[in-house]
Length: 109
Length: 377
Image (cartoon, rainbow over all chains, first blue to last red; front, side, top):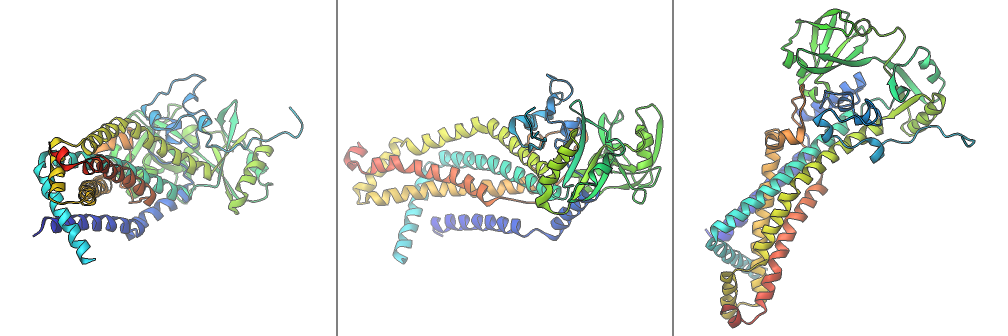
């Protein structure tokens, strides 16, 4: 067999596997779909807001519910106690993911 | 067309023979290249799957959570607070939630205690998350005791273990009845931890939140879209951190690939000289080298991507697990549902396959347009 046939054959097989992988992404298995739907139903039922990834502190267990100053919540200038703090983004105030919903006064303060 | 195809196949035959002459060097390059794609694709697939899963499941979280702030800290919702919300138009359902943290010295871990209605969990019973049950060795109908913050011992019977499939959300959860929750934490009567609001029209959520802020100035509304955005930013941040750590390796590979692709060895120069001397055209030489670049980079990309897929979705990203997943005493065991964004893979493809193929061409073109006699000397 010619080397080019082998090389192109190998490339075609690899590309086919990649396409198959892409195909899988767009069609979830029944099991995966059930798992996702069940998790979402649990979130709706219990009113959950966060993933249970890091349980050691309020701001790592419930990053969305923690104070806006996250790592500095215990007192101003407090150190970040837990290593998982490094896996979370900096305080929200720096990246502004929170909407400004504070009431605005009609007359100057 | 047939002639053109046949010509390309002959060029590939020749390229493969030429690559085989420098077997060790090229296999080494292919391995390093594949490894790089594998690392980058693993990172992309893992964070994308986590991001997609978080977005999908958390889309079911309450539209608005209302916290009360005292001196800048989260405080309990006092009685009567709920009634004030009732007057805001657009709020369909409002529910006081009771939840809190409990530190268990047995596991040295924090649990999240959450009160549920009596028809779900009876007094004296609890339902626990699968990770907690696993770590504490709990099973159905077992009894477990927790010493409350006031020093009293409370004993509960496990009436259910939450599904292992939901461990990512419920690893540390302890669901108990409202009466048990209040007596365990000595929660003042009529007080709640926060309030979950359901807003019928999604377009009204912001308006409702603004109204809440002005009606209850000591409150902090947290919107569902903020929850989702926080998780997007958590995973973007973690992906970014790992990419920063990997930046050195990526640069090292870029230098290696550039060195290999752009610096022609004397042997390669002589080969080009001979080819030109026996009648190959400049275009043929360039085509041959394009095939060389494509064969190496495409094989590396496809192998790396497939290996990354198997690694992330079948072996739970075992190689990078500590870095990608992080750690915790009560860490959930979870398998992610495969999810990929075409754009991310296309970006990875573009930044790995194209630069190498392009880097191969420039020096070849320079060598190929010079006089064969001069190149061979």
